Image 1: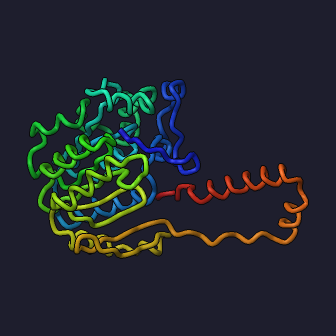
Image 2: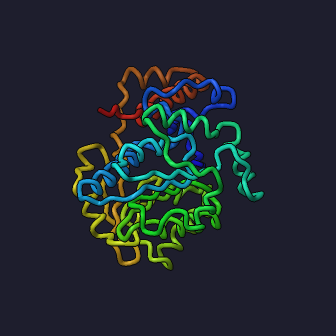
Image 3: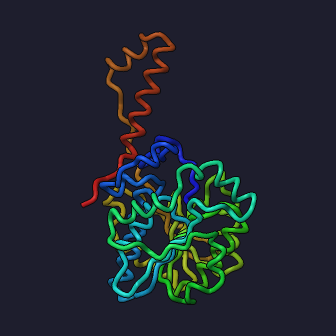
Length: 303
């Protein structure tokens, strides 16, 4: 389950209410699928998965927490013959513990259903992935063969104990140079995710390779090789910033969106705003700010 709390202006697809979820038509584009899987991470996922295929790296793909399928659809795009995508999520099942149940009830119980996920996925693929409708902890039983996966995406619980367990599942499932992406590693409302991620880095051998505003990417294998794969793309030409950092003696990339220079208001507009009553001026500025924010996060059409 995706468990973001993004401001409304940042949502790339509206999260449905209980009523609209049942009546929502099949998505025509991937942007029609509700969720918080943003353009930058879609590009990073696609680049890493495509590079693995180009290099002849084969393996299954694992997703822990899928919400309504926005990221799973992209993962399915990159499956090759003989490869398998496994998706594990509670969907509309009951949580196994009180804390997780409370998190579900707060934001997901009325909108997250397996049938909605399946409908969204089948709008773009002919067959469903292997679905495990259960707490992600069930995958610790070894049903995912050790070393069988080339990519894992973790976006399930925000609770430390659960995330730490999901990281352990991913480590066992990934092949030597497999890549794991972890969501919400830096949000103020998800300290449990942060604790589990950085614990894995400093005590569990996980090597960071890429940080975006929403996701942490790492490997237990050759981090330098993954970094070179990422640097092969001209991210700046596509509207992103690229920065280098050092964490625990290793280099890590940071990608973010380029910030456009503020638009200068014309003298007549500034004068008009100055002459308006204070209440009207504040309302006008709020409307203009909202319009700017929406333009800033408008999804870029994909071919």
